[in-house]
Length: 230
Image (cartoon, rainbow, N blue to C red; front, side, top):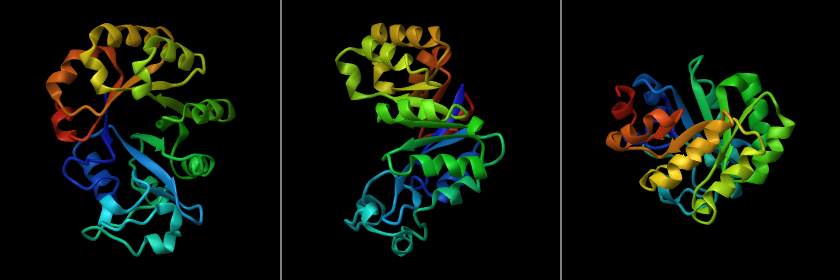
């Protein structure tokens, strides 16, 4: 089972920073998950929120700043890294899971991965299913995954079947689904019948992980050290 560090080793280091990513690899993660957004001048940066409120207490939008202006803000000496900076520190053979928070950086992000990392070691995922469907057709050399969440409440099996028709590499399910075994097992069976990988997010309880470890291909966790020894 693959262990991906959610926004880096975010249980102990502030998320989506170079330190969080370096520590994730140092403590044995198989890869990292991160979030991408674009600045006003279309530079790709690694940050989850669309503003700086949680990062440094300033309520200003990422999209309203150019990269130079964004560099003026920091948290305990850490700045929001560019995507290229993060790509430069990922060890060979490790896995990168890129979550696209917006449509704007998609094409540029894939170009950066081709230049600085490896499409075959990269999973590009999003809750924007139309975007992922488009990218699957346009970039056959990449691995693409559908993130699913609240929309599972309505017709979970129907949703999964429709996503599988798009031929993704992976489907990423919320850990809360594990508490509904009748749905979880049916969904996993449907996904695996198409030889598609299953990732569960965000898993921070090792005891819960034991319940589904043999049914999935990987987990995304804040708590790297709790899972690398399982």
